[in-house]
Amino acid sequence: MPTTTDLLTLQQWLSPAYPLGSFAYSHGLETEIAEGRVTDAAALRNWLEGVLRHGAGRSDAILIRVAASGAAAEADAMARVLVPSAERLKETLDQGAAFQRTTAAIWGGEADALTFPVAFGAALARLCMPVSLGVALYLQAFASNLVSAAVRLVPLGQTEGQEVLAALSPLCDRIAGETEGAGLDDIGSAAFLADIASMRHEALDVRVFRT
Amino acid sequence: MNKPHLPTQPRARGKLEIEVSASPRGTRLARLHQAGAFRALFPHGAGMTAVMLNTSGGVTGGDRFSVTASAGEGAHLTLTTQAAERYYRAQPGETGRISTDLTVGRGARIDWLPQETILFDHASVHRRLSAELAPDATLVAVEPLVFGRAAMGERVHHLHFRDRIDVSRDGVPVFADRVAMDGDSVAHLAGRATGGGAGALAALIVVSPEADRWLAPLRQLMPEAGGVSLIRPGVLFARIAAPDGYALRKTLLPALNAVNVAVPRTWTL
Image (cartoon, rainbow over all chains, first blue to last red; front, side):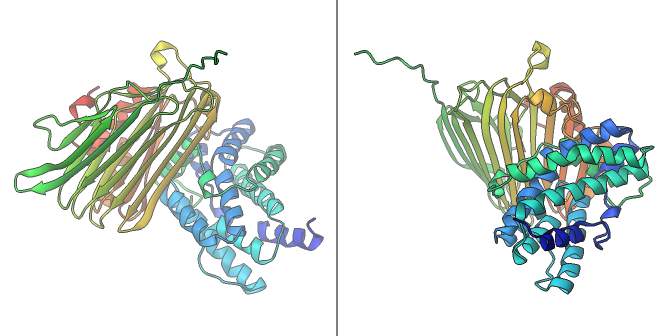
């Protein structure tokens, strides 16, 4: 059973206040909004479900698990070549580096540059944290960050945004459960349009987000 | 006592090994080995182009097909297919396996340009493509995928498909793609982040010392459901979604031209 201390540490790592700069990354969502494909809460929820189930959500869950099982180097090598675009590479490297820096300064350990899910998984292992809980909270934080990006970009109220996030919580839990025991060979995605959105973001005329 | 007669799906095997090398008069065939239901034709007057032909007519559960091709120093090999490949309905529990290994030597180039792969309802296939490149080699690889013959009203409601691509340059992995689709592909591709209702998809990978300067022209050619990115120096990746195979090909032909591909004649619209 996770202890309250574990939970508090995980909350801290995944809080928007932890200095990862996550608020600057939209994972391609800014493109979907700018090009008119995500315009309301229902569309946002559908898009996020796809990214969680068939895209980076599930892949990151597996990368976290593999890193937490001690194979951080292999997971990191895979994470770096698996990104579909330059911005997705930047998104995972920048947040990973920031996570490593801050976490190593406070809890010790290596601060070498790792992709974000791998840095997170390695930290779970180092501090003997409950991995499934960590994965579920990571996925929720990922979705939460994108909901907040959407609230800033579309006429979507704060409450509507939180409704979307609440609806996605069971999915975060489910993906965490389904990826238990999964290895790098189990990574497989089908979030083709989310990949395309991150590619198209590079060429958007007006950009508020870095990705 | 009579044993119950269990119909077994006939299993096709096919193997192709192609090696080409540079000569003063252009690229020549250095070695060819073909076995089973896989054949290669080499039409005249089209550079060194190998047109692959699956004589079994398609791929179904339990089939095994493999292609190994290498281009030696300075050589240029184009690989394509005579027609669209078909992944047919598989018996429950049976999976077809297709693997491709490409080796591109110093200053060499391989263009991997199969025509569309058409997925039929109940298809079950694991496919992999691996490419090893010398530091200054060029690879252009495209994989167009069509979900059912739309004109015939066919939809793919049952699918088991794994597609993996790995590219390394000078021994270092520079690109990987992993596609996994299970179940109802129509529902799967209906999502806003997955396919937006697309009936066809393509992945285009370009690894080349010239890739960086091909980014801008390729970007100009992308449809709204398409994108391209220079992931790292010398590594370009594009994904394109389209309503059907025809629309996909209309986008792919100019995109291939933009990366200096002489599109094989089998590929005409």
